[in-house]
Length: 191
Length: 191
Image 1 (cartoon, rainbow over the protein chains, first blue to last red):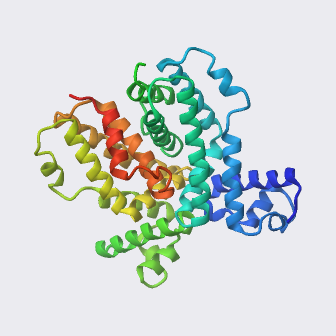
Image 2 (image 1 turned 135 degrees about the vertical axis):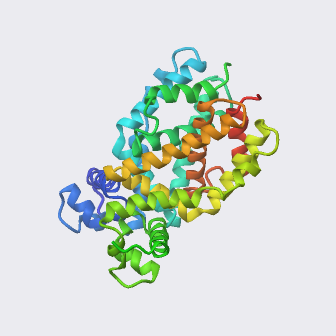
Image 3 (image 1 turned 90 degrees about the vertical axis):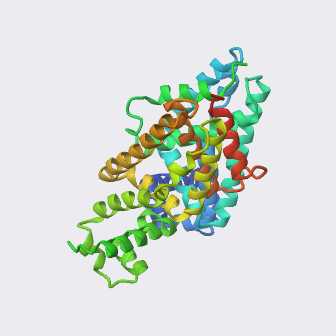
């Protein structure tokens, strides 16, 4: 296997582009090479097969979606409370909505996981570690609510972002910030 | 255009199968003909182009996911209240989870809508009419909560079902009924 890590990252980012723009079935070694602007055959030197490529794409998506180092600590400086949860959720949704390609790639990957057990295992692992981290941060910071509060925020924001990306006019009278506000108002206890 | 309505329905159901099993890019006239077991070229006599096929698939999914006639009236016979909302949600989630092919087809179609404005318009229309109907039934039956309660239930159940279909082990310690129970407990007011 080829080992240039920058080159591998370029290939994985090209794979995310292919996923988001053409769907999972459009994600082939050839499509990745073409989008990355590298000679045909390059990807197959970096990934043993499509399953391995998909697993590494899953990891890469979560690296890209993770907040920059220090951002969480800085965000947690104000006093914990329902209002701060609301601010953090709006910030997170704005970030995810700006990372459109990555987040759409994740949706495509999740549907592909229905057909691919190896990818399903990998996605379960990264999604669980992401959810666990969010629960831990919430509880450690003394935010109102419990682990199920965070789980429900995660469910609701998934549904909300899925609408935002695929049928953005569905909740035409309410913008993203308002919808997130309603989710937090209804799901997070006062203290 | 060919006009045999039973044949058209057979083709649309074959298209849903193709969507769920192969993803949106696997949905071609040829794949539909093959899955429906009809001569190659049949689909192209029923649909002017792929956009028209996709729009009609969207309609057909909602016809199939709709509860059987009378089911809603029967379900609303008990006294309205938080407990009844919980029962209805568990019933709905079990139905959607049994209609796996249809519901996965809807997810695939929604991602395809990102790339196809005509499909996006059609999906927005059917999803909005479904959501409006759910809000109307909830309010007319005197269930606790308001239109936003129903909207939030819809967000949360979308996220929950998306996990259930794509990464079923993510919430390994809790089954579908428990998760729905938590969603209703947290989102629906007592009265």
